Structures are given as structure tokens and as C-alpha cells.
Length: 362
Image: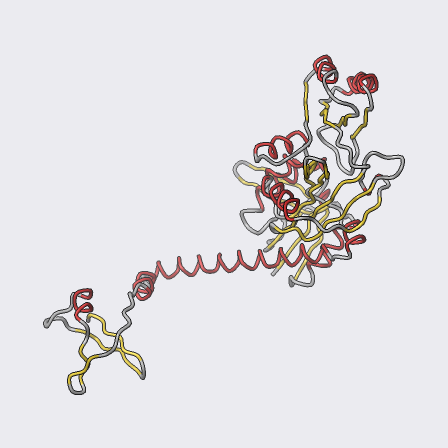
């Protein structure tokens, strides 16, 4: 079978591609920046380096929020032909913190209290009602970028005035005290395969490893695992990283990452997450390929008029009983006569071998 990894070429992507080669016969690494989509009338064509993209059994397409539209379009087209762990809609939702919040909220997944306003004046009215400190962040951004900390109304108001120049909506969120720590949970195929606790540096409120944090392995309780799995399912993705705060109210989801870095989780848990991803993708692709083969076989049998015969052969009822004999002849139970509708004018065919007997109407 063949697989492809479409990405921006990060180290995590390289690790995943290498792991895929353990399972698939052929694996291509494709640079997302060199992908083009051609639309001509009703025809759609995906080009890589000006040539049509090859056919694959599985494709893992991922990248930053800047490529969300391209990834969504790619997945919409390719998922009809092969297995892809991320859905087209997930790129729109997971790469937008507000849309993520809305989706998780719809599934009753616990999160920090969050507000979004369209004007600075409206935001400042909300700021007066909030408990400090608070978190302020842009809807789009990764690796902790675009996340700000305000310890008072005055500082939050000043940040809003400065951000007003950018003409961007800002999300206001309660600050949950966790000593600058959070959990990064990796979900693959509806299971938690690895998790670790991220600790922010002494100069940072953000626990993100890319912002100078460190990590340590952690054993999650079943409830926290279930929350991470529910978050992945809410966004309809098979592979993701779920960021969770451990609060006095229990686990609170703050983000779902479609392209989680593997360096941190691999370093601190000693778990080969890339291999977990590759093995899952292989098993999923193999299962889908088997189902496709069965569908094609069934379609062929129907065209040949054989399918109905096969169905009939499988629809036998069973009767377990002792045999009755008249001399050396077998007498069949009356219930068989009633069920089969056989009578003394019915012509039958006997099919038999040692330890087996089948009687069918001729």
C-alpha cells in the first residue's frame, strides 16, 4: 500500500514519514507549499510540482493555520479516494480558537469561561465584570503565539487599545491558576497514546514548549482521558493534541491541535508517538481497502447474478435433534416438512459426503 505525508516539512513530519515506511510499501513526503489546486469548469485537479498528485491509500495532511483553507480543500477532494485522519471541516474549526470553543461547547466539553466581542467598548464592559488575572488571545495562532496575560483591568484595557489598531477580534478568557502548567494529550484513533505535563518557564505564564517550557511524563486518570477523546471526536479528527488545564473544577480543554509537535511528547514520555500514528493509519487504510474490495466483489457478483444465490445459501435455519430411522432409512422431523413445503410430488437434489447432507428442491 502507498501513503503520503503532506506537511511543511517539520521534524515531527519527518519522524512520522519514517514511521510510515515501516508499514507502507511506499511513502512520499510532499511539501504543502508546492501543492496547487486547479479548477476548470466542473473538473478539479490537485497538482504537486506541476504534475497530478499520485493515488494513495492513506494521506496525512497537516500544517499551520495559515494553510487552513488549502488543507480543507485538499482533504475535501482526497478523502473520497483514500483514508485521511483529519476532516475538511476540522481545519476550519481547530485552527480558529473561537470556532473550537463553539464546537466543544456544543458537546458539553468543559472549558474556561470565554467571551468574544466585536467592539472595544463592549470588551471593556466585560472586563469590568471579570476576575483578574485574565487571558486575552487572537482567534488564530499556534505554539502559544497571540496569547496575552493581563493582571488588572488597567492592563487589559491598555492591551485592548493597542490591539484596536489591528482590527482583529479578541477572545477574553478567565485565567485558571495552574502554576503555569498544562497537559498535552495525544489522541490517535480514539485512544490516548501519550500525555505529558508542560511547565512554563519562570518568565512565562504559557506552558508551551515552544515558548521555553519543559515537560514531564504524567499518568492521566480515566476522566481526563475521556475528555481528551471527546474533544477529538467533537472536531471529527483521528489524530490530534489536546491541551488541558488541571483546575479545581476538573480538566478544562483550552485547545485542540491538529499538528502537534512530537519532540516534546517523545522526549518526556519515551513513547514513539510517530509509530503509534503510522500503525493506526496503516490498519485504518488496510481496513478501508478490504471494505472497498468486498464492495467491488459484491457488485460484480450482483452483475453476474450470483449474489442472490450466495445470500440464499447463508440463510439456513438450524435444527439440532436426534435422527430417527426406519430400518436403515432416515426419517426427517415433521417441522422440516412444514418449513420446506416439500411434499410427495417435490423433486429434490441430494448433496452429500461423509458427515454432511443437503437436500434442495430441484
